[in-house]
Length: 171
View 1 (cartoon, rainbow, N blue to C red):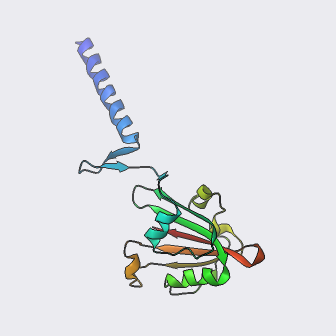
View 2 (view 1 turned 135 degrees about the horizontal axis):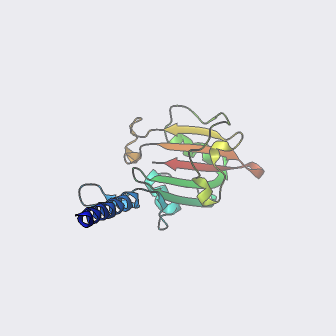
View 3 (view 1 turned 90 degrees about the vertical axis):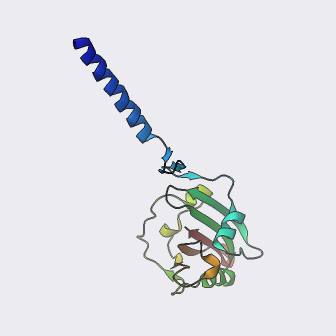
């Protein structure tokens, strides 16, 4: 009788261990049989061209240091695009997003939620002194071109020789 009890305890412990391992795995199912991610990762097949296409943002002719990436997340993917251009073109990109307010300096104490632009070898724009910012919800301003985009942020940061670095982040 004691042996049967011990076997039951071991069987329950084994089932509990399997359940724990399954709940800690990086994928699972969403109830429909599809695999669902529980951790973020970088899509190595997505670059600046794909990000620009998703955001419906034209990288200005002559822009340099064009970089893009997509972070795949459980709920919503994050699209990053950055390039160096002149001030006039940067302002045109920002204005094309149809934000309610023009680019403006934000308080320097805004801390990024995580390291995103670091993946592209860049500083996080939220921590850069004098970086100007604008954000917009494309569906809210009835921007039909960007109906798949819930939010776009733009940061413009002055560089040397009259150039600026543009940072765009969307989801």
